[in-house]
Length: 138
View 1: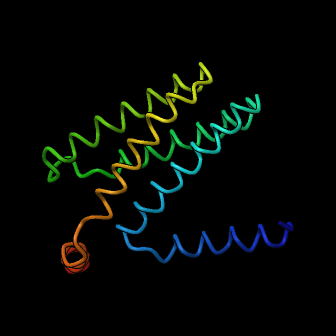
View 2: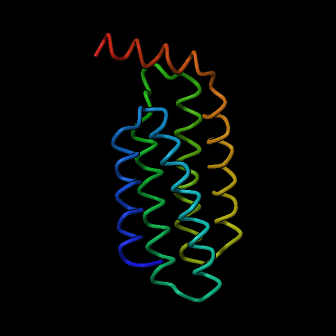
């Protein structure tokens, strides 16, 4: 892939994120975490600790952003459970980074896939109602 193609691809990803609604943003973040962790596994297998560390660090930051986005006041058990899952994922990623463990990365990838599947299963009309209510209430 040429440098110009890579730049064009990055610009398209940034544009997609800028125009996404909150539900789409969460999907984008979850997809990025899964992709980065898959890349980190490959870097562990190639003994490329620098790139592995960067991808895991980026993933920890993204998981933290998901954690920070939770509505702990109105989210009830769902928010509390997600908060704890994200906390577990971050601690597991730290351990995976320290021990070069692809197995631990697989654990977090599976958690993120399950969250993503659940997120994507939210009915469209529920998403629309939430977004409309959010727009009205600011």
